[in-house]
Length: 243
Image 1 (cartoon, helix red, strand yellow):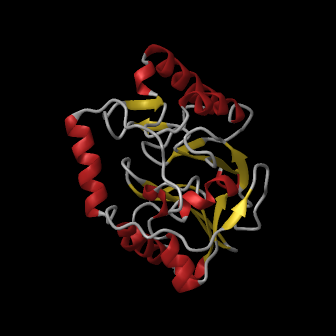
Image 2 (cartoon, helix red, strand yellow; image 1 turned 90 degrees about the vertical axis):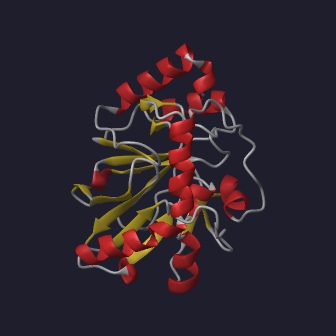
């Protein structure tokens, strides 16, 4: 699905993957679940492109619902996968998340788990090699992704600012659809290691100019980054259990 110039999305509001499409090639932001591979290749074909046009995969963090087809691209197509150094071990399966699930509603949780199962979320392939990145790096990839450290959801969570796509990719630093409750709108993401640190990290987004704020889970947001941050902080203050 095309969101804007140079910007496409596959998946849905439960789990999303984003593509930065330029004449120089394609950068993939997050790799969703293993079963998103078919959607990836179909979207590329619709664009008249192929996997050979992908220059790199940038992960917003190392959780399993963002690793998806990353190792397949790295192993079978020699495409580098970039992850913050603090989440490198997590993306290799050497360390596990320590977050609790938090509030849940049966219907929303069942939809999330069912979708994840159908898309191969029960057979995660961890990375065996990663290219480590750090805060403030600008990667030599299509769109020149700018790395912004956002620790909290995980130690190595990042946001990725791509001015060419008029977008900030936030991963699980926030969500616009809570996958365990179904609540919509900007709010703290579930499965967060350190909720207080995640809230503090949001201040790193407020100086950015972009039309699109794109979480890994939820509807693309174009209502202003500052407004999204305001709503997330308000949601956390109103219902601390939602963090």
